[in-house]
Length: 242
Image (cartoon, rainbow, N blue to C red; front, side):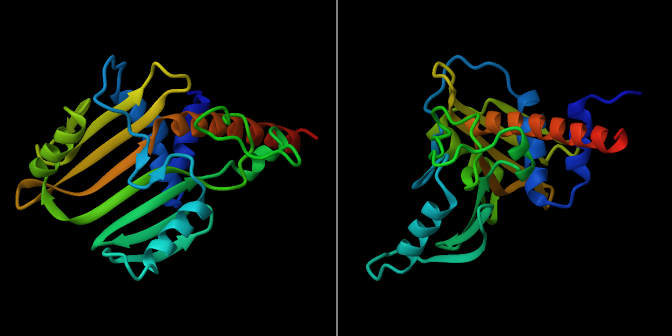
């Protein structure tokens, strides 16, 4: 059996221990299969809280450091962990927020070199072919104490309307509800996706995690990984057949 490039890439990501790549499985492969064209949306998801999609790691880090050290702030904010240009773990009023950032794989320098002296383009506008050395925000994961899934769903529906898709597991309890909050009349599409995860607790559906993703950066990442595979393939052939 001959595997397609996407199937091989999927297998490589699936067997990788890097948790960031496991999120990319959902982002690049599972999410598109669950959604279809949508004609109307209540509003687009252009970021999360004070952060917009495409903001740099440093800008968001500085924002939270400023908020955490502000003596007049009524919020309790802690920066618990950081991995430069990749992730920031923030605890805010007892809830955990994992800000995830994406930068172009180093291997792509061979096919997409960054222009010397040229600033990185805004990925939400026309930066889809640029080499990005700085991590840019593409997703936020929110983790909290278990809450009945129906209560979470009610709050999400009040803000965003009905979910675009719901998937329930064989146990009739676990699964996910997906909101597609994308303005497709713009090019590139503006907005994002929200995923509310369900899990079983005492035979009832509960939620402890919600993930938010950028729609535009999803396409950017998908293109980058196709190119990434092509570069690996070329290098392998070169080494095999000198």
